[in-house]
Image 1 (cartoon, rainbow, N blue to C red):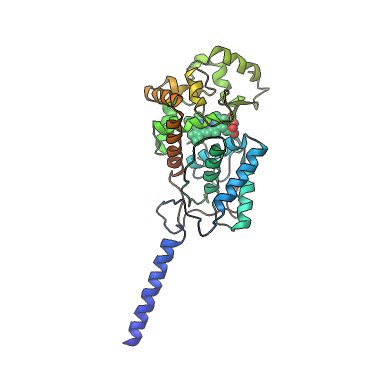
Image 2: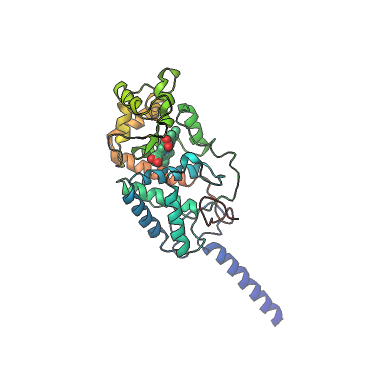
Length: 318
Ligand code: HEM
C-alpha cells in the first residue's frame, strides 16, 4: 500500500511539474496563439534593451532605416510562410541581422526574428517622434521554405482600394486599421518604380488625380524611360523623417505619392472621413496607430511548439 501511495505521489508530482512547466515556460508552451509583453523577462531580460540600442544606432547612422524596419514588420505580419525577405522589402534587413547576432550572443536561440521585427518597428516609430506601445511577444519564426504565397497577401500600390481593403480584411484588419496603419507612410520613401505607373497613367483609373505641380516635379526625377527606377522619394515630403500626421495633410492636398495613398481620400467615404480626422488631430492618429500596430502584430502568430526560433533571420534553420 505504501508503495502504491508513493507511486501515486510521484506520478502526481510529475504531472504537476509538467503542467507548471507548460504554463510557466515563458509562454512558450501556451500554443494558443497568446502573446505577452513579458515573454522574455526571464529567458532574455535584456532583449528589448538590445533591440532598442541597435535600432537607435542604425537610425543615428542612417535616418531612413527606421522606416524600413516598420515596413519589414508589416510584411512579416501579412506573410507567414515566407522563408526569406523578398527583394522588394529587404531594405533595412542588415539592421535585423545585426540585432539578431547581438541577441544570439546574449541568449542563444531564444528571441524570434518575428519579435525582433515587432520591437524594432515600435522603437523606430518612437525614435521618429511617434507613439509608443507595449509589444506583445512570444512569436516564433516560420519553418516553411515556401516562397509561393509570399507576395499575394501584400497590398500593391496599384491595387484598387477595394482589393487593398479585402487584403486587410483577410488578416482581420478593418478600414480603421487600414487608414491608421497607412499613416506609417509619414516616414520613409518609395522607389520611382513603385508609383511610376500611376504618375504617367492618370487616366487609367489608377486612383485619383495627383496635384499637377507636384506630379511635374516627380516626373522630372522619375522619368518614364526607366533610368531612375530606383530613385527614392519621400512618402511624406513635408516632414519626411518625423512621425506625425503630415501624411494625412498631404493626402487632403492631393499630394499622396502612391496611388493607394490617394485612394484613401477618393474611393471611400469612411476612409476619407478618417483621413480628415487624423489630419486634424495628431493625438487621435497616434492612439489609433498604436492600437492597430498591436492588432497587426497579433495576426495569427506562430506560438508554442509551432515554427522555430531562427538562428539567422534570412533563412530557416537547417
Ligand atoms: C495600405 C496598403 C499599402 C500599400 C499599397 C503600401 C505600399 C508601399 C510601397 C509601394 C512602398 C514603397 C516601397 C519601395 O518603393 O521600395 C511602401 C513603403 C513603406 N510602407 Fe507601405 N504600403 C501599405 C501599407 C503599409 C502599412 C500597413 C505599413 C506599416 C504598418 C507600411 C509601412 C511602410 C513604410 C514605413 C514604408 C517606407 C519604407 C522605407 O522607407 O524603406 N505600409 N509602402
